[in-house]
Image (cartoon, rainbow, N blue to C red):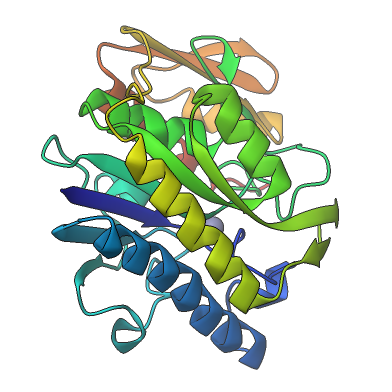
Amino acid sequence: MKIFISIDMEGISGLVDGTQTGGDSGEYNYYRKIMAGDLNAAIEAALASGAKEIVVSDAHGGMKNLQPEDVNEAAYLIRGSPKPDSMMEGISEGFDAALYVGYHAMAGAEKAILSHTISGSVIDAIYINGRETGEFGLNAALAGWHNVPSIFVSGDEAVALEAKSFVPDVSTAVVKWAVGRVSAKCLHPKKARQVISEGVKEALTKVNKIEPYWVNEPVEVKVTWRVPTMADIVSVLPYMERVDGRSTKAIFEDYPTALRGLRASITLAGTTVR
Ligand SMILES: [Zn+2]
């Protein structure tokens, strides 16, 4: 059994705000260790369930959050950025399942730790074929395109509910309950690791029963940007159509191309002066 794990940081146990997800602070360095703890709980549960190969894609910020020696030696670690498939770099048809650790809810979600979609500074909302979609759905659809089912997610309660709205049978490990966007009631990391382990084991018992999440093609990608300047600049892309002051859309023949076209526009939008 081959397992792919995409690991973000906002949904890691105990973590509640942006001082803990980057920079050169002691807080960040502390939570990198907690991140590895959540990850290793998932890796060890997968190994106990019969996984023979595990590939981990560090998916937060500059994608070098995990320190190599902190990660269980059974897993390969993909790190660094940019990469063509970004948070899902390494996914391919050969995997039996995709797992998501430390994920967070989409931009604008209520009671959701550090909710955003890809880039909080440029994006208000992303719609795939008309459906508002956050990072879980965007990434599960890429796994699905490769015929890989998305079977497990850990993070706060909000991302667990969001994931179930895309993949009803996904197993979830809730490690914290947000009070606001930067405050939460949290499990002790040790308890969180237990919950993650149990969730992964449960997920792997039904791995063949969960359908890969599939987005119909051609794919329409609509984005509502934070300010009209961003819609102005991304409209120079040959595939982009202006919808209104803050929104653009584009049609792509297949999903992987849609995701790359989306990422190119986000990078371009990030260069604008507000
Ligand atoms: Zn992140």
